[in-house]
Amino acid sequence: MYNTKKCNIMKINKLESKTANLSNDAQEKLKMLNGCEVRSVWNYEGIVSIINKNEVWKNGEKIDVLNTNKKINSLFDEYFQDEFGCSPKEYYANFGNL
Image (tube, rainbow, N blue to C red; front, side, top):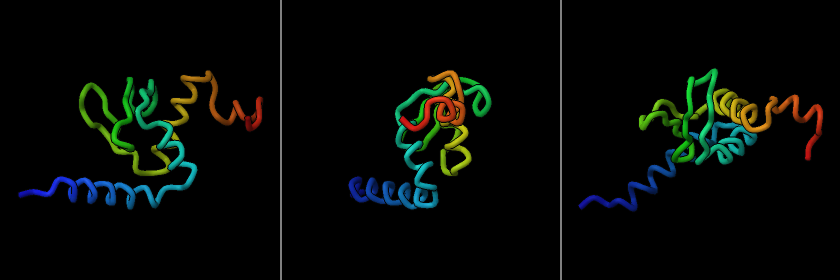
C-alpha cells in the first residue's frame, strides 16, 4: 500500500529545498502571490493563477514554476502594477515604506 502522508511530506520537503535558494524578499513575495490571479502582460500574456505555492497556471494548465528570484520578482512587479497602477519602485519613491 502506498503511503500518501509520506508522499506529501516528501513533496513539501522538496518544495522547501527549492525555495531555500530564493532570497528572503522573493520568498515573501511568493507567499503573497500564492492564491492570486495576476494579469500578466509581459511574462505570460494573460491572466494566470499562482497555485500550490509556486505553480503558474493558465487556462487549466500548469505552464511554469516560480523557482527563481527573477521569475518571482518579475511576476510580482506585474501584479503590483495591475493593483496599484505603478511599479513598486515608483510607489515607494512617492509614498515611502508604509
